[in-house]
Image (cartoon, rainbow, N blue to C red):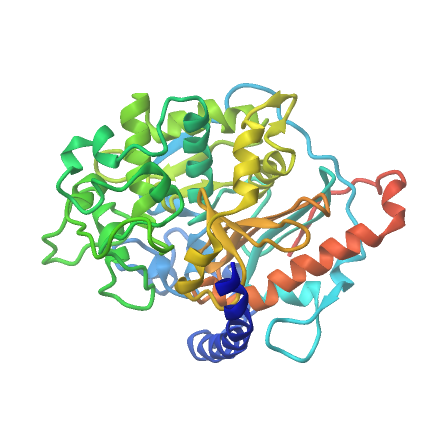
Length: 456
């Protein structure tokens, strides 16, 4: 802990530098701002058929390019095979509307900058597709942009990991899964691979020593080999690599002993999902539906992207609506009890909130997250409010502030993949809204008149 305290001032300086570098990169990579890149205004995939210059496809990787991704992230099912995560046949759990008009004017100072910014300005800065704020379980803010809508699923990217890991933690709590067992004990086919002797806990906390990197700016980074194997990215004509997620696991070596440091690796989550399938005898979609999603009172089915064997992309392939994303966040805020039932054991939630080993987190160099840690695939701030988050590339997220009784769910399509490009105009904005809600004595009054969410 002393080591962490000594490093924090240096990390704060690095944070300012990183933020300014991210600003410069964003300006170079994204000449179009949020309004100019609006997918409706740009006319992507409109027409019968759409003009060739307005097509967005999988085969040419255009779905991942900017600004096309502002359309594709809300239309994944049109691009690749998927598997439904059923909401079940139960009634929808209503989210009471108490929409407030004062949140747009909340101001904050972005990380590494001197000027202030208003909440509504931050939405454009972050290329927001949809955002919803729950306070004490009531919707106080909800907006949609571009082609996003209240009834349309959006890809959650690595927020998916938090769903999958929470499910795994439930099975550990029940004794179905042993956190200290090795991967090979469930998947003996992987005994000689780099991941074979990693424990389930090391997968959950991202402390495996695999020879694998996650650099979204490097086309040769192993993360792209993983996604090509899983059919999430197009394969070049001369592709000779793995044909599925599971086949890819066997190709991953080990660079260092497991358990030493935190290092973010999506492959950990997909290996974890393979373990869940093996020990349960069910697909990940079935497990998630049965154990969590069908019990939320969700409004719509969710869905996973899948590989050629039908295996779900556990590291980043979940698609769901914004309100259902917020319901999951509210479940976590309420200690796992939601919709009249204890869905996730409180012990699991408590363990996540306590966070992971902060000293192991420091070497990863997350400049905008000084003092944070990682536990069961959730990012834990250790701030005075005990906030923790689920985070995905290009701006997907759930932000849970237990002290403020607040949950923020967001979908976005930012030009940059890494959250270092969004944290400066996201984290302080969330903290500012939390303080605003906590300080407003009028919150004890009756809810404001209900109205439909804004759509821009």
